[in-house]
Length: 170
Ligand SMILES: CC(C)(COP(=O)(O)OP(=O)(O)OC[C@H]1O[C@@H](n2cnc3c(N)ncnc32)[C@H](O)[C@@H]1OP(=O)(O)O)[C@@H](O)C(=O)NCCC(=O)NCCS
Image (cartoon, rainbow, N blue to C red; front, side, top):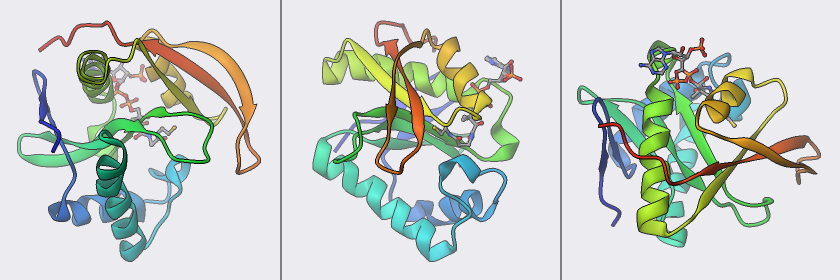
């Protein structure tokens, strides 16, 4: 069981069965989820939820859900999928939650957690070239490009690294 992370505005907790509706809402939105494998039907969103819960069991870390004012508005955490070239800091936000610095605030909590709890000096991430929101977010977290790789899905992506030493601004 991984403890919750808290920031000034947010609580990050392990996903559980309550989160199916939030996952379904995000993945039903083709535009919002286009860089995240969407759109997906509700049963497919449930499979993503099950995988996110399972990731914590398999690796001891994973993608948290982000709660604000008691509502789940997105997710943020670290995935390390076997067969994929390395781990990644990853995020998704419902459209109404974007443009407020929420992914940045959640990421700072995850980076601090990775440094203190996992003992990692840095965390990597990657995204599609056209995902400008993910690039801006990564650069705002101190991320710098390390290398470019061809992923198992045949797509070339830049891989960035961010330091885990930043303090949570809660
Ligand atoms: C990637 C994603 C999470 C980024 O969301 P975001 O809202 O742009 O990121 P943040 O929550 O950190 O907000 C930053 C924005 O809020 C603004 N902002 C407002 N208040 C702010 C505050 N207090 N602090 C920081 N930024 C603030 C910033 O100016 C910035 O806007 P800009 O991008 O127009 O310059 C979002 O686009 C998403 O969910 N995409 C779909 C999933 C996805 O592609 N994930 C990555 C796959 S690899």
